[in-house]
Length: 409
Ligand SMILES: [Zn+2]
Ligand SMILES: [Zn+2]
Image (cartoon, rainbow, N blue to C red; front, side):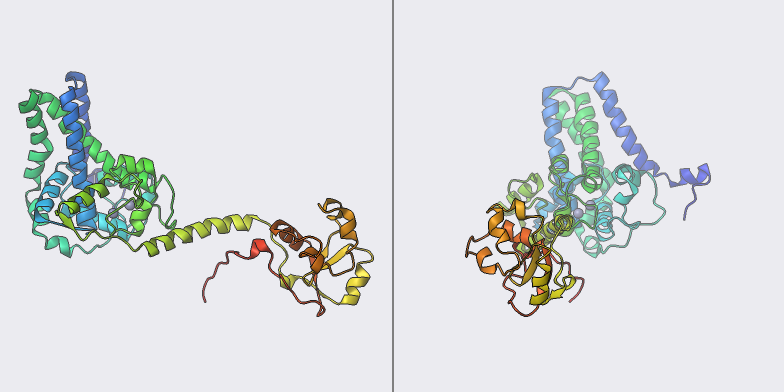
């Protein structure tokens, strides 16, 4: 355990290399905006190279190596691992290990980007300060045995020098003579934006949006986070079904990473795209929907429970009906005193039934009352008639699909 008591301790916890990368890169970009005009060719090149970089992270680092959500040919593996290196976010070996801990220990101190420590910590703080507790253990034996992953890990710094910094500069320099533009925009601006786009998956996607599949963890679904992160923003879905190659399950949801993987499969570069059974996805969705409906149900007032009602003999009912306006329907005794003048069929019809069994009249004899009337009537229950009348409809229509929480069988 570290102590924050002295400056020395604080300085010993700073991850100086990460701090340098994450401050120097945007500083150079900002300096570039003041010295070098952004040319249209360079802007288009930066945008294209940004997409290239991000697909390396989302389709490669994340969905292929962290989650094994599909199989990639060797060509695609090399392509993605080089694309991912251009983001300057560490080797996939390091990245995927942390990400697996994040999934396994979400929202706990063992989660390297624990969202419970706040938005800033989950966005960038975790990379700048060494954690007091090391990230939880995750199985990375497959990554240890993957020669493409190990090749990138060994040559990581050479790779980022070439694809992170040199290539974007050289293409703009040789292509249209904009060496400085290539360096500042296709290099520094792109890396900065790719950094923060990826960081948003740990911050924005754990704070903004809905939990349509499970609300026990902080991961959320939101179109805005998907827009920021090449489709990784359907994060509640992703945390529930991490081996699914999709983050957005519906065709109209924004997930360019999913489209990229599906396109690779279409041309034979990817195979075995994993999809979680739709039945199980629907079950999770329904569970959350029922939970929401249960909250609504609990806000509504319902009729008294059967066991709360007294059982009354016919004679007692008759005797009490002389002083209260009591009517029997389906074996229940109802006190209609407060309702007589509100009866849509008129006061007279109702008063005629006081002290009597009005089941037949209520259920079609005079008028076949609808759901609303049955529900309202059930709120007027004051007792159950002993023996005499069989209970026809003990459950009011509004209660027939009632959601009941079952703790165990
Ligand atoms: Zn997450
Ligand atoms: Zn993930």
